[in-house]
Length: 78
Figure 1: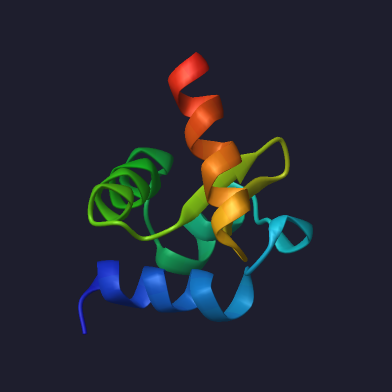
Figure 2: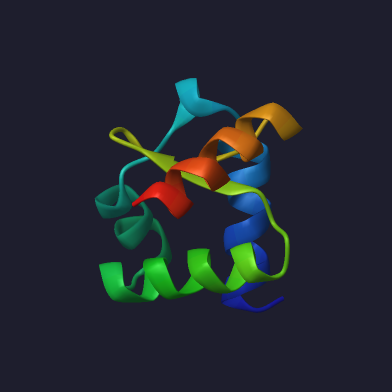
């Protein structure tokens, strides 16, 4: 598996839902990379339809379509 697949699986299993959001610094530590690499993976996964969202507490895997719709709206407004 490559880093992107590992990252996606980790987010899906360990950080599903806003309540389980994780800061970028923790992801950087776990995946031995910089914040720019985390953002690149998140953006690439999002373009492939993977429901990774973000909030003030970090990144998380969306639990539902409504969460994803709210996140998409927020991204378009910004």
